[in-house]
Length: 67
Image 1 (cartoon, helix red, strand yellow):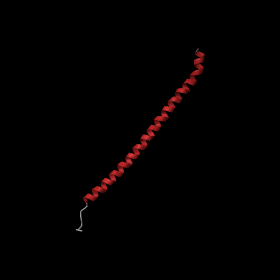
Image 2 (tube, rainbow, N blue to C red):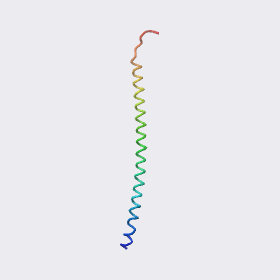
Image 3 (cartoon, helix red, strand yellow):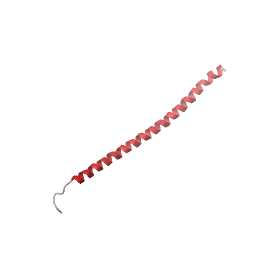
Image 4 (cartoon, rainbow, N blue to C red):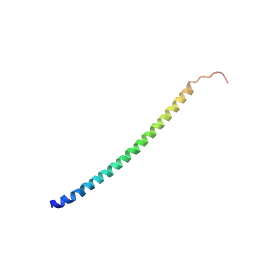
């Protein structure tokens, strides 16, 4: 029986490594997607901040004369 286990052990290890590789690939894809989402959120925050600054400047302006 030991001889059979000796011959099939590499196949078992290969199978386990393939499962782990597949799991890691899926996790990596999840992290890449999350990273893209975070970059998109950062861009939206920057745009909102720019709009808020423009609005603040508009509110703080004073009229030069009467129309």
